[in-house]
Amino acid sequence: MYWAEKRASMRIFKQLPRIFPPFGGRRASTLTSGKRYDAVVIGGGHNGLVAAAYLAKAGRSVCVLERRHIVGGAAVTEEIVPGFKFSRASYVLGLLRPKVYDDLELKRHGLKVYPRDPSSYTPLHEKAWPTSGGRSLILGPHEEENFRQIAQFSEKDAKALPQLESLLNKCAEAIAPLLDNVAPDVRSLYSSGILNRIKHLPNYMPLIKTASILGKDIPQLYELMTAPASKILDRWLESEPLKATLATDSVIGAMISPNTPGSGYVLLHHVMAQVAGVRGAWGYPEGGMGGVTQAMARAAEEAGVDIFTNQPVKSVILGDNKEVVGVETEEGMKINAKTVLSNATAYVTFLKLLPEGSLPKEFEATIKGIDYTSPVCKLNVALKSLPNFKANPSTDKNTVMPHHRCTIHLNCERTELLDEAYLQAKAGLIPDNPMIEMTLPSSCDPTLAPPGCHVALFFTQYVPYNRADGRPWDKETKEEYAKKIFNVVEEYAPGFKDSIVGYEVLPPPELERIFGLTGGNIFHGSMSLDQLFISRPSPAQPGPFTPIPGLFLCGSGAHPGGGVMAAPGRLAALSALQ
Image (cartoon, rainbow, N blue to C red; front, side, top):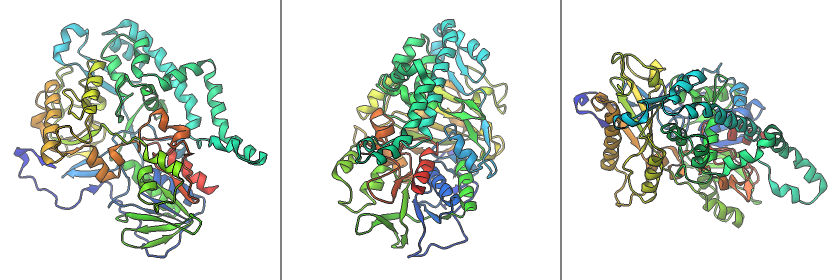
């Protein structure tokens, strides 16, 4: 943590960062060695909490073992700077499956979401003003206003974007049945016995439903799933920064470029968002992303789940036939259970928690081959005032303008900038022009910062896990990177650096260390086509099922993948209940 000189006198808390609102786990019971549960969930991230809640609502006895001092995984709110509460890792909500929201009654358990209107703001650097046709691009849910904004740059694009959005929305609607159902195990169709084959046929109904929704547009979905996002965008659109703004959604969280085949699916993945019934919309949960997992924890606790924090799991215990019989914690406590659901990454679950030699060799080889490369560096910044953008000056320093509520895209004048940054990071370099997405959730949610102050969350790319210069990600290199980002913001919003109270920098190694994200990858593994659907986590066995009887993968490393969706947790619980 770094402190601005002018606020050096501020009292620095010596204790661990605090969650908001507080939830440290169930206090009604004590974890004791030898205790038996129907199911143990490893990891109290959002998927683990959802899996536990579904199991408990079905009448099972369940405990959750979380290694950190708080539940929530990467969806937590923590007070990093005194008085400022940050969504420390994940930062916006939109992918949460409606089925989970309804089944667990998350609204009743306190989840409140502020929809964003408008939703996307791309200010242009003043050097681009004379030739661009406009100074900024602001997009939201209102088609007429979007038309006016885009027409500054291209009237053709203003007419074309609704058509592109219609196609993307149709594809997202078609894919929805696949997100809410277990990926089929293709090998079951070739297993012995006609009855066994018939038993697995219902698993293919979502595919049939997807095909029926798409109809003649099946080839377009196929292209979207396999093509570079740049190819799709170039066909439909001609103007920058519109293409660059949309292209960021095709690479977010992934070490890929808009020119990478398959980046079109990452774009589609983010179109699947939905807030307040509006498809493609994202919002800020009240109290930060911890507000989401706190509601999930309350739902689980109400259902009877025992939640224990500061309880890292050392290993999954197997019986004589390599079936699950329980887990052992780092403290040496053994908890008995015939069902274990792991919210850890596939790498940790299969290669760290299981006894050596317990996995089929083919499956183990595929797990070792999972790509966990991460380009992400998250910055959490406390501000004493709102940034004032040159492209859209504020009426006064304390007034929240519509664009303050958006995801703010910087270094986004041209799509080529994204590719250039990607290539530099692939070479182990810090890019000259990092991709920057900045949000100010306190512009909607007053609970996050003191009066007149704000929190800024920076989701930046591309950075290497291992730097080509051989320097580690330590205090010095993290501070250098932060200053680089802040200098960029200063060019768009002069005075920003003077408004900084304190900040935190989380490059890939820190995301891995703090949140258990292998490689720092926020999705528990790349969302490339070779690591999705029937190949997630392995083409030898799609999750949530595993080769170990009684062991299920309930985290984002299982189908349908990453983001705060909660689908993997729900599907793992339903599979375990079978």
